[in-house]
Amino acid sequence: MTLVPEIIFKGVNAVFNDSSRGQYWVAEDNNQIVASLLITYEWSDWRNCNVWWFQSVYVLPGFRRTGIFRSVYLHIKEEAEKNGIAGLRLYVETNNSKAQKTYEALGMKSLHYKMYEWMKD
Image 1 (cartoon, rainbow, N blue to C red):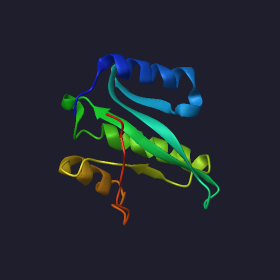
Image 2: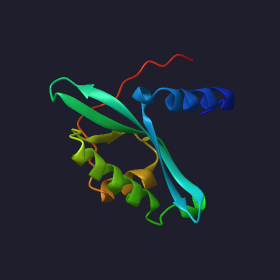
Image 3: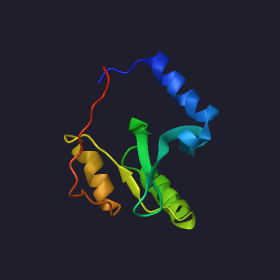
Image 4: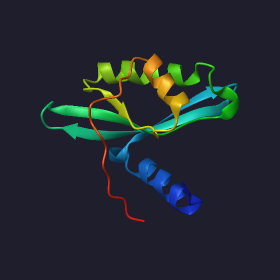
């Protein structure tokens, strides 16, 4: 995947300028940001509430497999429960088995849905 820094910069700033687009969460270690993710919102009409989607999950390589993501995930899950959120979702690349094992260890399940998309080039 090719990422274009100028587009990413504008996209991140769009969230900071309009909180209806989502919210960023970070984890720090000794005043250094070591992990981040974006929560975006999906309205579920048949649940009559939001589902939070994890987007752009990133943990610095030196902090992977240390429990940083687990801490962030559990904190966000607690906030979701307090705020009446229906659930947490994310998508993961099919070949990213390490991430899949992490998510499964946290109690997340691979569902019966298959994802399809159309993305503008």
